[in-house]
Length: 286
Image (cartoon, rainbow, N blue to C red):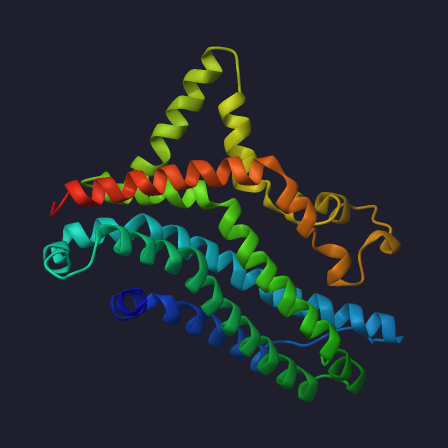
């Protein structure tokens, strides 16, 4: 346990971007709230106020989630490669730390620790922005941004998204770690070109099975983790009564757990992670 904690701390020491990027991004949003143009229509009934508060919190969460997804992908792709490139791998291999511990610590940081850091940053930023906007804007808007029950539901939704996306994207994370442990250069190209080449070859053979699997794995998480079809709520003709008003009616824990694609993907992810560990044992500096 001590080794795992120290390895996670090491990632914070060596990768300041883990906390620096969300801090800077949050700071920019605070500056926008302070000096940006605020022109929001009058909020009337209590349901409308709840909707405005929910949209505000979800918008902040989605912005941080997108930035977090991009950075987590880059982190997983670079973490083992960077150790070999700067030859720090020789120092870490001289310590009583196994390659399994090292790879798993980087996986935990990329899939859980970084999302939690962004989750905290999104919370702090949204609360500060709500405070600023409630002072700058009209009273009705200010009160609509302070909805404790909506805020608590967003916390549950964030944590649910962190856990389920970590499981769903495990094969993607495993592939990125394999490339990071194997490639001698151009890790980004090596992560993209082999799957792309296979999809192109498959297209010439008249099938698109691999492409459909990849597309489902990259973009299918909302359909599996969320009640109903999220695309139906994003259309032009949306019936407001169909949109869940509570997070408890939105998340679909039983549907996610019972979906075979989740666990088939997790098994593939575990196999790829084992492969990354084996490569880490055999490949040292570049």
